[in-house]
Length: 174
Image 1 (cartoon, rainbow, N blue to C red):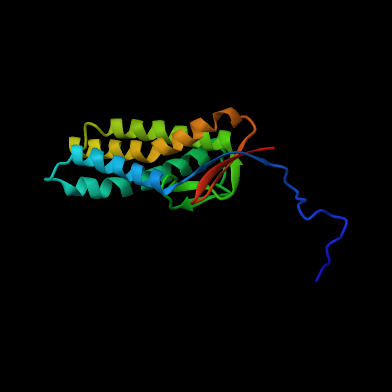
Image 2: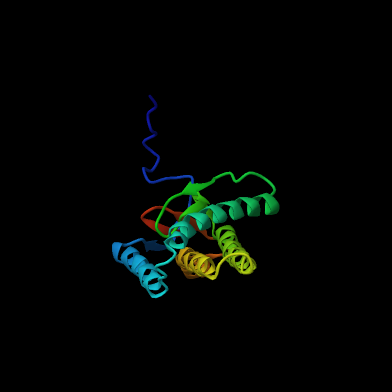
């Protein structure tokens, strides 16, 4: 058992990060987020093909996971240390475990958005129109909160760090 030096501050730490902005994942935001999806799906509802609605979201989660892994393999050339799969409302997929550079997370999410959209467009000749519609709806629904939060952290992009938890998304500066 070690005794702490009485001359040291109880608040001292190795890290010197300052919280710049925090976006709470409040219940009303989650409800609005799901109501938006339900409204769009009811507007686009096709009662003859429920399979497209039920399978589009899992297909996109798997595709997003593969795209992030491929992105890391081709850009960094190594395994994704410090990144793992997490379930969440606004952030679901491969995400940083702790603090990560806002610049890196923004790059990954923007590449994921545009490449995912391009793949959906490329599939146009080979899959039915209804599948394209639901894949696009779910892709936008998954990506928009992420891109919105990253847009809000844009002023801190150069040196900022992002921390994603189940309750909030925070931005820190050194």
